[in-house]
Length: 243
Ligand code: G3P
Ligand code: MG
Image 1 (cartoon, rainbow, N blue to C red):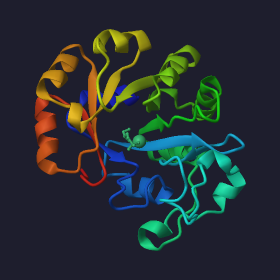
Image 2 (image 1 turned 180 degrees about the vertical axis):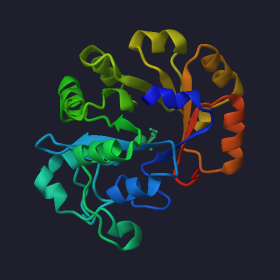
Image 3 (image 1 turned 90 degrees about the vertical axis):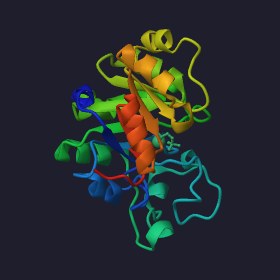
Image 4 (image 1 turned 120 degrees about the vertical axis):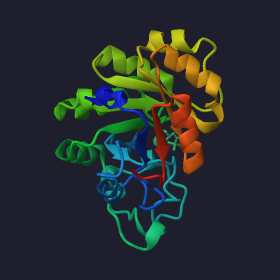
């Protein structure tokens, strides 16, 4: 159960599968992360034929061998699966990772996943994208072992309509909502996943006093990690701070 994790203090989430050591969001990165973190964070979006693939950027240029600014949804699953996701990082080929494979891996290794839904609203309706992701999670019967998060909060509302048993986290970057606690209750979310800039002692304290989980991205400095845990932060997302 994902939420059980939050009973323990000072959790480490492998951000994109500890992207300091691995080509991000690949199976190799997931394998590296097992035994070195409490859960793994990956990003999901859609191919042109609406298969859920694990990928961070909107365009393929930075982390594949394509040097044009194609968007992920402009290529089919088959086209995406022909690309190399590792060589840009360390010269070693890595295949595409899709959500199905990531879920299978997570189940096999009992490794909880935080799946971040990237904003695909330019290409696909909110309900359809959420439905595709939830269907896969349900097919593995992993509803309670996953945390879903997004900067696009519309997704979080739809997730709860479709599958109330799944835990969600509200991703924020620049500012918390005006009434963060009411906002979270309205979305029936369990956590705020906030940027380092937003993580001050007062904010963290007030959220934690209301039993809201607080997770902070992206923390690669050991001293800052200690500070955040001392404030009461539940988890940090890190590219390199291993357990
Ligand atoms: O989910 C935490 C963090 O991954 C959010 O930002 O851009 O690294 O996906 P980003
Ligand atoms: Mg992410």
